[in-house]
Length: 341
DNA sequence: AATCCACGGGAACAGCAGGCAG
DNA sequence: CTGCCTGCTGTTCCCGTGGATT
Image 1 (cartoon, rainbow, N blue to C red):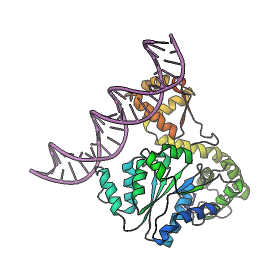
Image 2: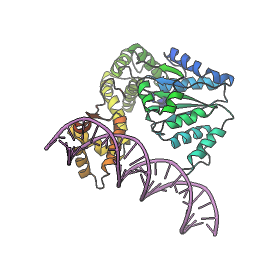
Image 3: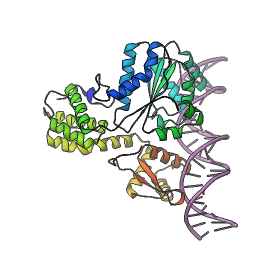
Image 4: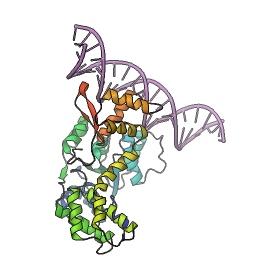
């Protein structure tokens, strides 16, 4: 029943984008100078999760390289590359200058390499850029005349709050493209297109697509996740179309699956912290550390645990309620609506 | 007023991977 | 191959800040 699994995956960039034409043309305009050999101002994509920011950024840059093939596009996800070193490394990697770069290459060496890779313009898409711990790397990149950046993040205010002063002033100019949540009709159109490309004809009805769209509440990632999960189950039992029962199972699944995946990727100690918080529902920092301490053989220090907790709060896994003395921690439920991440 | 508790920045430190000389 | 060196990363130590609490 599934024809092409990639079409239903999260990283898939469709060759034709449904909706978002306005956003695409704004973004294309911003990078247009590159076509004629100029330099583009920084561009920003802002919006909540699952509204197509990353997808559109990639799509638009793909179209750009069609116009001018010499342009190299580097995609960097700042969840993984959150230090200056990793960002530079990741950029070099996609630009193909990472050949003999190794772990022990000095940062300035990496930067120098990127600087000398100026035979063709580079567009750096920095995804989830609000996860960057050293925003100064943006300033470094900005100084390179042959590198243009597209920054992808959730909210402008929070992003700029994390910047240091130099970066803030440098990036004040630039094109902002903001993405709103999809309406149900738009989601249905997106799903229909994915189903057309990824599934056998008639394996899912319009009414079912509508149901998925409603359940996803404007989040295309969740919507596609539901479709994928339902389709996988269906083909697992040899069915040639989706049944409503399969959908019933897939809908609550999709959000939880995303959560489970992030939890699985969490290092052990952080997982345990999460579990403790989850079991208690609400717990004060002292009690949390105590419980954690009893559960592992070699506990990390309090300071390290604080680092973990701030990190986990960033992932939107846990939440600190209150200030100073009366502070407590609790988990954020995956189905919490309208998260402010 | 003194003490407690929590937070987070910054410096120091340890572990590790890879380069390189012998 | 071995041992030393370099430099990133994660962890810890130290400490100032600020709001409770006694």
